[in-house]
Length: 127
Image: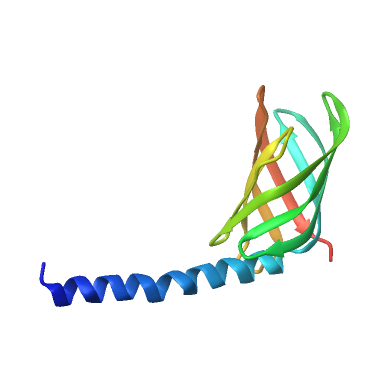
């Protein structure tokens, strides 16, 4: 590979990387607010409310409230949720979940996982 071509590839990567990071930060900022929907497992389901309190770069902070689970209602806080493209990963102390943001930015659809089970999650922007 010629040095000129190597330099071109490196420069392209350096120029593109901040643009991608800026897009992730913009997406993260757009997720701040309240999202409501439900979690599902087999034939069971319950309400899920996610409040994204803040975004810093591609990282989100907030809390989720899971209603009607096998262990009752509970809240989880998240401080390290990450946005990459339209994908969002919410690592939480009790239940992790990841979701894809719809193209119109109004819904998040994905899966939740715990040490003993997993299922679907669907959320709609409330504000």
